[in-house]
Image (cartoon, rainbow, N blue to C red; front, side, top):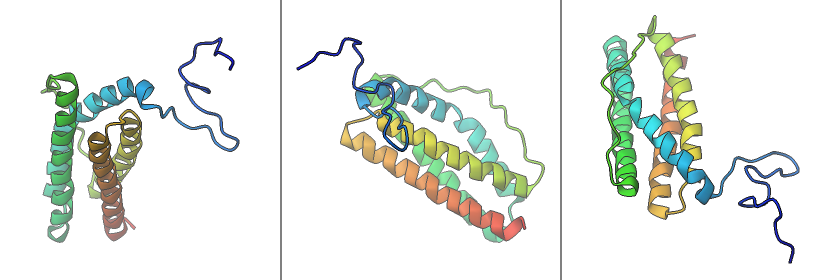
Length: 165
């Protein structure tokens, strides 16, 4: 059996070049540090997200407030879950930042659009976080979060279709 002269962690590191599409590095042992960093990044934006969702609730039509409130409540749950994972792994809290650079959207439709694309970028971030964990309970928690983000994107898309033609 030949040894690996380059001493890379696995064949194709940091990505595997399959015939049709290169994949993201998916080996948990090597994706773990980035996963922790992305968790911190996700949680640090929580104050801005809170201000954004509260603003969107103030300008939303009354019949749409419940949809936005449900999304906001899920985001609060996600932050608690991410903080729990980080605390269990690192044994310390993620430091909170009081400075939130919240920029109000010009109108409701711009806010919906910003929220929609924010949810879609969050899906990509959570997918990378998922790659960093092999422990099934953490993978299940991250799966719950990213599927909620997909659900939120669908709800924002629905609100966009109702309001922004």
